[in-house]
Image 1: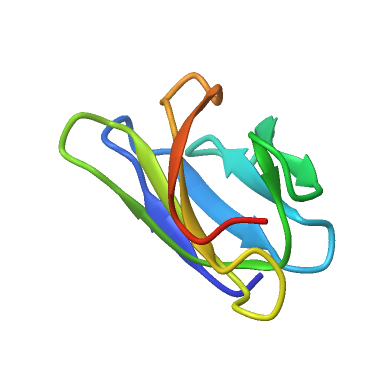
Image 2: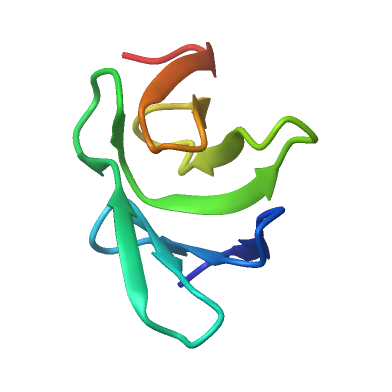
Length: 88
């Protein structure tokens, strides 16, 4: 993992740099959700590293600047919202 944060429900969200996704763990450490997959399209990530949760619960993740050059925003349910930046 390159980044991690807690959401408003106390779940731990971790960036998986090499599997190109986000992993969500409950307070007991059980994996409860995987968000995103490798790629350049909507809802896809490439080497995610920075992560944060907005006050409304949306998840903000930055990606390695060598490929996607963007910040992706996901809704709390894991669905893609939009991105900010260049994209590909």
